[in-house]
Length: 539
Image (cartoon, rainbow, N blue to C red; front, side):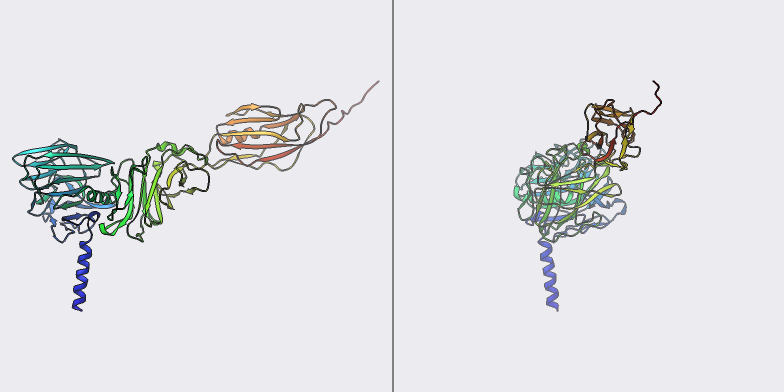
């Protein structure tokens, strides 16, 4: 039994050590993340080094916030909070921070001791990232502190170099500077974190060595997917497979977000929305936004980005035609097995009347089998829908037009012999979207040229676009006006000689809302000979 316990302990230890950011475990010195080992007073290191950060003075503790950055927790520092760390310095190192800082005009420090400091804001109101050698100099990177934006910030230094390489990734833009600190003895400290910092911090990764570009790409991809940060490069999983190719997805690289599972990285991001201010779409694994499902397979991912098209075009009626006016489009890349996802978008993000999700392998969303039209489901302030998105599919939203409906036209034949005859007093017009309506009324069968005539008596709010004896076309700004106009259509026969053609005429009504015709209704008018006059004649 004792051996079984020892084996279990060793297995769990090996399993834990095998997980690292982007699968990059070599030289991993410290790994702090707010979704694991984070307590009120201690931020527990996820490596076996146990380089925990702590704060046992209650008034100086940062608060732990749930769902702070892309549905992940983070510590909030209010300017007077900070963590105490380890009394260690490193002449070579690579350190990553995931942070959303605030501009309160102070010298915001990240890692710091009495000799060196990695700065979120170099000095009061300088608004730039930087590095400090206390008593020697402040080194301003010129890279703007990304106040109010979630960013991935990294500092890197080789052992025998005097340079500190600083990178900031935010909103799809990567900014860098290689600072000369004047001494190859410059060091990265681990003594404390967050003094004078105001804002959220979700993760800190510290390597006791520099990394090559391939390794850095894996680490940054892990962080980008987890925290909804758009990269200016390809996304890869811990095994090195590209899961979002920036070149192949050219034109759809705005507000990239993703969900996925990568066991080597301890990544299980089941719900995501790009943290960029212009992002609109949230996607969760499974069929629930509130309770996302677990992924069934390791290294399964779904990533998406959009083309930055106008969202105002989404109120266009979708006609099922190539480039039908839908400008904002998203593209999806799937790796592994994902299956059903729940997609959510705020109603306020879409124009009134939008009621469909379009999904297609063709970004023009043609009206054929390649395009799905899925009805959106109302959920409070949001629209939601469950859909199975596949690799290289596109999706968008649209106002799918509902054709207008004509009803209640009387079915009995009308009999005519003289004068003006009203064709209907009960016909109705309805339309779900209340679009502008046009109408065509015609004698579609039995028409006798030079005898039969349709007559329209003007109605408020309706204009005549064209009129002949056989056909009248009307425009109306409202359904009610059009309904009144249809009830004002009359028939007459003007033949006064002996050439009258008797028999039935079919009068047809049809309306259109700008994209779709209504159903067609018809009524027969039976024309009879005019009776001979009745009277007394004298010779």
